[in-house]
Image (cartoon, rainbow, N blue to C red; front, side, top):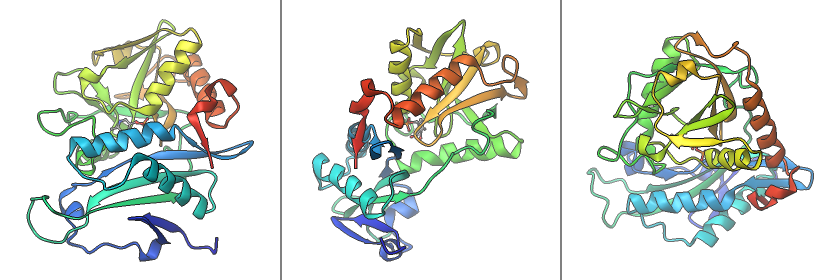
Length: 302
Ligand SMILES: Cc1ncc(COP(=O)(O)O)c(C=O)c1O
């Protein structure tokens, strides 16, 4: 480490200031890239990447959905991620793999265009400044994309224009984050987070039929809850259930477990972070920090 940060680009580690693309790059103009968001945590035995294999698999699935030929195997890609984090000397960070059409011609066509794969690793703290106290959400007037418009199960750059509009609208109205409904009117998710509500000590989360990104943190929470004997229902969630629940929280690699204390200016429960939310949040963080041997298989040590 010499104070610079490093990027893995098409098989080589280079200084981040040298990892540049021309302004006309296809994926910059048209949002045609795909990406992942992964975290590494500092455990008692050094840095460890959380659920790396699952993120690698989802990245390849996103590429498959958009017919992007990555030109690299999953094993090579996984090594690239580990190498990037190590080269940056980080044991706790956010990792951003990105594949894009590295081509400058005008036009939407992608056939024959060069695909580049990059991996970045940057220091990262809380996604929401008031994560600990809980955040205020607003149900968005923008609906979540659906498979007739854009594939919600792919983590593709262009999909996030929908998320950005919803988030902007929420922040303009004084909330911290948006909640998007699916096109059939059920609750879908946040702009970059899955959503859980708690009712009568059970967890309820929108199912894939509500056009969510199938989150890896969501899956972790479902498994942790099952191990703790907490019931989990994956089903369509009516908007009004958001107001009559006891607790609610977002899940996501960036958001981790973020309590929600109000929706559309209505306080949930007593407006404090709920008991089940706190319990899940504590367990999730202990697992990510390598303190729970039962979940050691979720960690890839650097
Ligand atoms: C739209 C959307 N939903 C949900 C999530 C949560 O997914 P994960 O837990 O895999 O980070 C993300 C973040 O990746 C997202 O962008």
